Amino acid sequence: MPTKTLQIPTADGQADAFAAFPDGGGRHPGVLLYSDAFGLRPVLREMARELAEHGYYVLVPNLYYRHGPAPVIELPAHIGEEARPAVFAQLMPLIQEHIAERALRDADAYLRFLTAQPEVSAGPVAAIGYCMGAALAMRTATAHPGQVAAVAGFHPGLLVTDAPDSPHRLVSKLTAQVHLGLAEGDLSSEAISELNQALDAAGVDHSIETYPGTVHGFTMSDTEAFDSAARQHHWDRLLALLGRTLTAG
Image 1: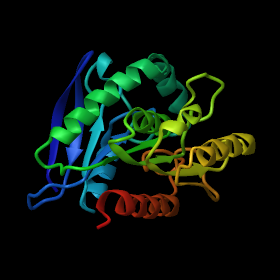
Image 2 (image 1 turned 90 degrees about the vertical axis):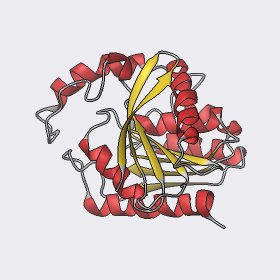
Image 3 (image 1 turned 180 degrees about the vertical axis):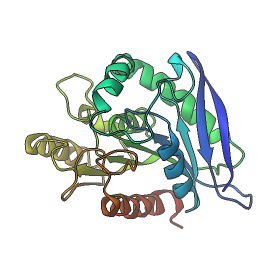
Image 4 (image 1 turned 135 degrees about the horizontal axis):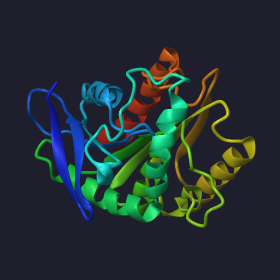
């Protein structure tokens, strides 16, 4: 499985990134993968490689590149409950600085870079994300409706907020198909209803599914939230979405 460490030119500097793509040459549909709050690390590289095995070029940027190359903070190999308070104490300032304006500037740069890679085929791309990355994927798709054909978010955060620019308030701009895989407790029933209503009103082809028995972070094998069956279910849903939107026909 070919992989690369890359530097993406952005309006604010150079974002380091990881890319994985199929062996054997040729060009493949592009997928922009946004990490969870813990950022680019071995488990994200593993997931990018696994997705690339199904025929996609997967680009995973370091969301916190303004503070240095990944890993921006030292992470334990296994992020257990005892480690989380200290980890989040370091991460929260970085997360809070990643405001919508910055995220959109970055998304422009990431998509421009992704679609220019010689291994990436012409045509639409997908934006997918985990935890806070789900909101970034949604923002990317609403800002680039002609380019992003699929959005997937798993154990998402920050999709439904009180802010005027909350992602759920922007879905009228979407042309992408959407799948959201929630852990139990990720969103209140009221928030899920509000999100469904917004997507329905916009005519967006979408599915919102709560994965039973899961907790926030269920796809991430380096955390205590990991659920192997739920991660496989997430692959099934994601690959079906990408097959419909990027490779059908």
